[in-house]
Length: 298
Ligand SMILES: [Zn+2]
Image 1 (spheres, rainbow, N blue to C red):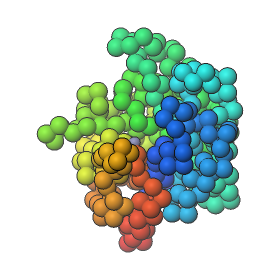
Image 2 (tube, rainbow, N blue to C red; image 1 turned 180 degrees about the vertical axis):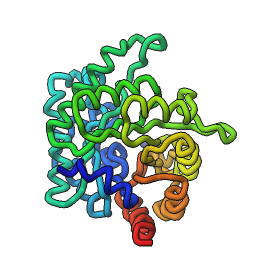
Image 3 (cartoon, rainbow, N blue to C red; image 1 turned 120 degrees about the vertical axis):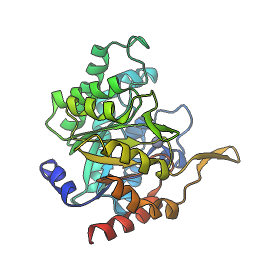
């Protein structure tokens, strides 16, 4: 059981998570409006191929391509009937890529895409049911941990963590997306890092952190702010800089070298796991790996 030693191994060294899946799938031909998670079934070799590239780049953990595979999101594609298959195949593709290596597979869970009452119409019960349904399938398919990420609403994040904890004993990570205004670090919806840390700890998250939003510069500040308010391990997955339009295509301005050059500061700020979000590629992860290795052998 890999999950038994996951939390221990993070305590002794910095671990490297993989980079982006979405932007990699787009590079392989995923069209706008297509369900990325359906590729687990229709193009498993593409998905497994991306996982393999991250593992070859040195990632200690890869995340299943199941970010949007909750009931509420799949219903919009009329794919809710395939919910179990899509999530099981997502974990299987990652496990196939990991093979017998010590690479951990995270069962990935993203937001429902709906707003909870009173801001929106989704009830807490409905969100909890969707998250527990997905987490149970991911755990049952053999994920080593559950990762709830790119969350913007604290209430929904806490519900997702509680839901995962209610159906599995696996470690649960919870990552939110932040913005910084004149040095004030808050979630996209305006929650400060102290409230975020307290609520996610209370919900039972084993590891908390941040992903997406901006590049590594902002992430260093965000991790520093979170670290002030928690004793939990911290995960950080910055984007590859900022998105820029180039010939009608979105690219990211942060080169692998720029990201890697700031990794030591990110570790000093308190990050125990480092990965990449939008725009990061296996080349970014390979560059970051060098810096993480240097730190781990110090
Ligand atoms: Zn992202």
